[in-house]
Amino acid sequence: MSKTNKDHAISRRKFVSMSMAATAAFSIVPSFAVSGLGHVAPSDKLNIAGIGVGGMGLTNLKNLSSQNIVALCDVDWKYASGAANTFPNAKKYWDWRKMFDEMGKDIDAVVIATADHTHAIIAAHAMTMGKHVFLQKPLTHSVYESRLLTKLAKKHNVATQMGNQGASGEGVAKTCEILWSGAIGDVKRVESFTDRPIWPQGLNTPERGDWVPQTLDWDLFTGPAKMRPYNEVYHPWNWRGWWDYGTGALGDMACHVLHPVFEGLQLGSPSKVQASSSLLLSDSAPVSQAVKLTFPERAGRKGKMNLGEVDVHWYDGGIQPMLPDNWPAGKNPNKEGGGTFFYGTKDILHVGCYGIEPELLSGKKIAAPKTERRVEEEFGLSWRKGAHEMDWVRACKENPENRKPTTSDFAEAGPFNEMVVMGVLAVRLQALNKILEWDGENMRFTNIGANEEIRTVIKDGFKIKEGHPTFDKDWTEPMNAIAYSQELIKHTYREGWSLPEMPS
Image (cartoon, rainbow, N blue to C red; front, side):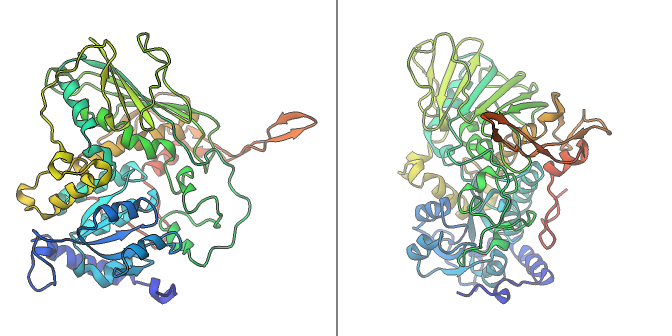
């Protein structure tokens, strides 16, 4: 395996033409059902490629080891050495584009666990080629990217799953059943939190570059983001705290903590958002954040619960919501990294991360009808040990015409992820000092004035001077607030990197 320019090179014309040809073929029937392409029957094993296999991607692939892992792709083969050792017969690549070019006909499905900023571009191109996609959370880095993946999944009729594995656990199902049973009445307010980040955030941008390790291709890691000098604070794990590559604690954990909120309350796009945080820097996510998303009344009811206007509050970085009056003294509301309080007109429901261990604060026994799937029971696996991945495998093998959706397929995960990254938008636009009004259908804020400007701190300039703390903050130049918000909603990709067109 050689990391040469020749290995990385793939002409845009060749890649586009290859994608179009593959799309034409796959739009008729899945690859594994076509004779003569070297694939087994859909009742047997899938040919799966892993992209980003050094961390959670390796866990996903191990949970899929009953299938054929035929290819591995990563930008850092030191970090990804575990995958190379675990799947020695898989062909190895640095560049996912080259892998698609060479092995497109031999791959049925892809597992993507790269940094957040490259999720959308890889998944989007994979779906246009007819590949089934398992994509780690957060689904995407921006609202536009989430909308794109939702529409592409529908257009190409592929099986999809976001990697919020708790979606296949009993907690989400039970939480929804309790809410829909009317046990706590109608929900007007939700408060959720996580104990993350457990990686550094609120950091000043490094002023120097480090030598790029021989095992890392920094250009490929950067992908569609703007190029900046490599520094060891960005890779291999701490990229989550940097806006170019990650979405901070909110993007990382809200996909777990807020999933039962989104599904249970049948949420869509928020109508209003606002946020505050510790010091907001232009390049690094803040240490702690508080976000409020207001969702308008939804049509009809769900079970015995009215779907009225509801406020969803989020806290991270060590901040937690105030405890209800009847919360048991000394009891920790944090379960598995977070927790949620649903404030109903009849009672309060508390659940942990992934919706685990639901309990009514009144002490009443929960007796909600069992209506939702129990994926773990179907596969005889816990959600931690592969139920989430195997539910996706099941969907990949089913006929698209009557396929049962996975527990976090893009039809739900796309709109849900829009909610999550809307919280990130609110944090990054907090200097406007207003409740932002959101037009979800058109993906734009409606109450930012044409001449409003915004700026953020580049570095805090903190020093101890004669025993006193001092700050000499370095600020960005004032930016047009509408243009800045639009860039956050839909990123401008670096030259040479592009997304497929948004389906109508």
